[in-house]
Length: 314
Length: 258
Image (cartoon, rainbow over the protein chains, first blue to last red):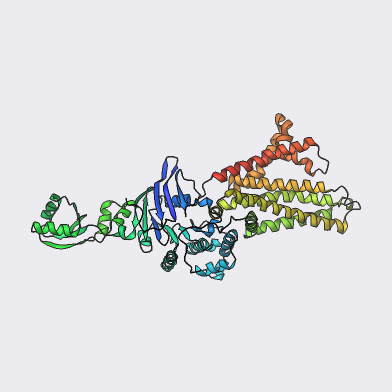
């Protein structure tokens, strides 16, 4: 496990400190600690049921933590007066009154936060809900429209921090593209964005920092560059068995992968060993599957071997 | 959206707490912003007018008094206003909007207080409507002594009765957090209890103390209430209104909102 991403002297905006949540005999969140920095998009990644939503509910005080604490800009969420003006939250796009119109949902939010009604129209325009769509009742909305409405609601108070649980759920490819641009722009303005997802490729494209959670525990965290860096190499040799022997004598492990071998060792190490033993290599290149993807596939239930074959094309 | 850069620290000094008056306004809005809630309000208004019209058309001229017109509205309003209270509470759970409401206002007690105040204001509006229509009916063709036997204390008792109903509805909504369960229990439990209390001897004696229906009788009897009767009322109200309100409050303040 790595420490928090080092981005210099900037104070973290969201600090989750040793948070645990226990339901009877079930440990939903287990000693989770991480930070989200201003000016960066932090992806909170894990399979369904890993504890992402519970952690996010704990952040905003909807679920009491069994242990640990969360601070936002140094404050407990509940201590922030009119929190909607500082922290935009979308936990579940379906948690809206089905009988209200989309516009009414935003009017209620804007009234609570004390915002002018012009803000409602601005947000509707921003998330591309047309005036006629805004007049329809939420029960007639598709999941994608609810998601857009939820994002509009989170952005109403022009908050500097966004906490979004699976915001891409239900959005079509164009919608996901739009959301990426929106959140990137938000982070570039210095905003703090924490978003969760159960799809690696969805957050990979937008996040600066990644936090991986599985079965309630953080399994990896760091900057995207660090985590996605390819490690190991793929190699094919004429004398494949001799290569395996030579490498294992050097303490380097290899496993069969397709017609070749996959190793945690770097390509240069393997090349040196092969040269020393006069082994003819047919192919030697850095692995293109990242450790992160393997780890994620393990978390999502795929066995290690499945993950290997997917990550290492033969 | 404004394109200005965000500060790198969170400065919360410029955003005051959301005032209670604004929260009450939001809750009043929630009473009218869906088709179902609007129809409930319209129904309360129409039935209030209708029941006074029926009394006006069917009663003998000598019975067309202001107090009789008002009294007629007590039952239908007493049925519907608690439902309004129940729904204002339960909709946050059945529609899962509590997730949003309590995120915008983490002090849950203030949201609940705003709901209580909004529901009481709606109840007050219903009574004002009843007084207005009853006055019109009395002026239009009341008996000669139509305005006698009516004092400000009668209107006060009337308001107390309806306010107690609204609060009881809110309380049952809070306890069950489910519209159907709250409405059924609200209507069935006190009635069932009244029946048991009237049949079972040991309880019959205690009925004025423990049965709200019994202890509320003097409120609409139009007679002077003794100190003893006020004590009965306080006791019945404590059991059927204050206690569930307290239980519901504790439940919601501690609940995990999902």
